[in-house]
Length: 155
Image (cartoon, rainbow, N blue to C red; front, side):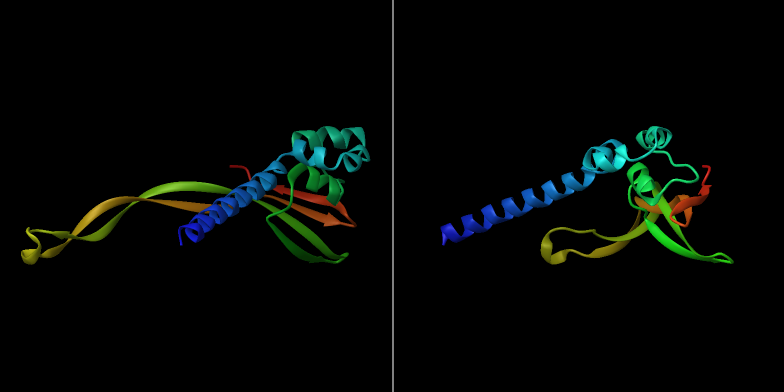
């Protein structure tokens, strides 16, 4: 029986290690430098001015989808915009804002002791609640596989 419990513990450790490794690998592509390193031939195919912007994590009008992906990574959302020229794809990039706000919470507290005579009464306490707000920071509109418009949020 002890062997089985030990095997389960080992399996949990291995599983935890593999999940951590996968997260680390995903985070490795989170910078332009990592994406350039992962796709050197694609990066070499870009014009020198595009390469310079991609290294800085910037985009400009006329960039291809590949150049945008290398500079910024995958978009958080993809929209489709219908125009007189057809349907354009819009890539949206998001960021997060964290705020802590105080809120009142009702709790039960004991007023007497020992156990058989314990009574519980409601009480109110102030607690901090952290909220994560997602917002769009950048939208890129593509027409004929090239960036046609850039919309950036000034914060």
